[in-house]
Length: 339
Image 1: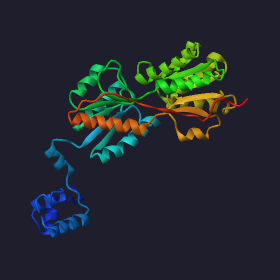
Image 2 (image 1 turned 90 degrees about the vertical axis):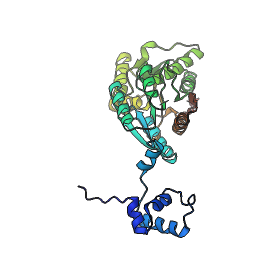
Image 3 (image 1 turned 180 degrees about the vertical axis):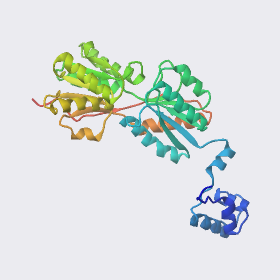
């Protein structure tokens, strides 16, 4: 037994003195189609407004054989880039008539499976997924059940449609400009080696070295995962290895940068921190740090809009293709530096 009172269309019809069918037609926007008198329409709408009544979306969607919902699976809710993606996507989905369910996989394969299964049990109409593995067969299995678009990450050797940032181009530019300042030592801190963001960002890093006719020190290229504590651990390992900071540091995500900054703050409050700090992903708080950090800025709005557009196309039975969304660099430390 519940203390809450839930009004139905039948209740609104009784209060307005019309039939349930008439009230339903009016409240579902079909009054003009059935030529219902304007006075009757106004009376029913006034009663509905006074009682803050909205027609049942469940009943309407049941008739259309759609749930009116989409699912978004992201690795971490605390990851700024993924949080921005969800924040940007949600109002776009709402405007398109969808309720967005957001769940986290914690970048764990088992949790990802459970998250997707929960969304499938809710009968979501489509799925936007930031994959945490390269298990192409697993994602292909889900794609047979509902429209699925990979977002922010792609699955290597998978034909599934994806919308990801063009990471290689801006990372190459960022590293190239830094090497042009006479830098010959850059530590690279990355996430899981087999994930597409790691592959693309490292490709841009290596491309810059090759274009400069130089060779990166393989001993200064580290990989773990994209967790903050991994950034801290890689920075600790690098500092212990060199006995000092490297000339420059590039982190493949802002979560890894957080770990690096934690080490620098604990070590000596940034007094001896490298002159050149770079990151993939950006945040306004980086403007407040004692060291300028040049960062690659992803187009969250572009990723969200293009991902949703592909889900809608798949729902309409239309073919879709993959998309690479351009990113740009926030130059907090413009080059060349003053002497």
